[in-house]
Length: 267
Image (cartoon, rainbow, N blue to C red; front, side, top):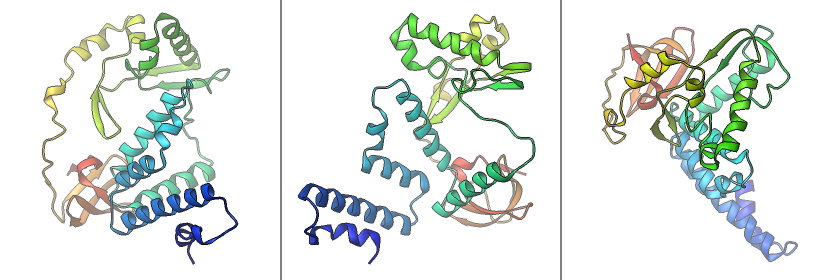
């Protein structure tokens, strides 16, 4: 008997309280729906979105603590990144490879951390990304007022002073979060530093009306096309199934990617 069947049939045991039996049965039913979605080829981003909603995970992480908003943003990034993969095995394979590389590699590598974790440390080169109003400073800090905003300004200073030789600050004009594209302004912390050049660049940034989330995506690729992926390099499309393209990359890796979100460049 598999675990899902065992959970669904929990009512047959007399050693559990009614509340425990009902909870196990409900979990089994959710997992059975999940199993059906996986076997039906549902895209990974939709699987994650269903699971988050089914178990109430978003409500769980939004517990009112200062880290709640950061956790929700991380969840949104996970769902957005998963849209690049056409199948769950492809996503899991990539996650497994990334974990293995992080654990086994002895070469020089980038250390990724939060600003809070960087306190007391120094590095030759530091990149601070996401310097956008609503992200850093966070929307919560902007809503709560000057005191919280000043706390994040001090945190920004901490991050900047972690660099011994080079400091790079960057922001995105738009980014995908929770499956939706949002447009942002450069962080007011950049303005505090007097970066007029960045202000001029922001003034010519594309406006929201230039992008329509509801425009129908047009498949502009064919089998045999040479393409370039920022993540996997150059390769050739060997199969197309709807919006899913199987690509044989020059490094020997074969991936099935969702063309709508993989940002492929035709060569």
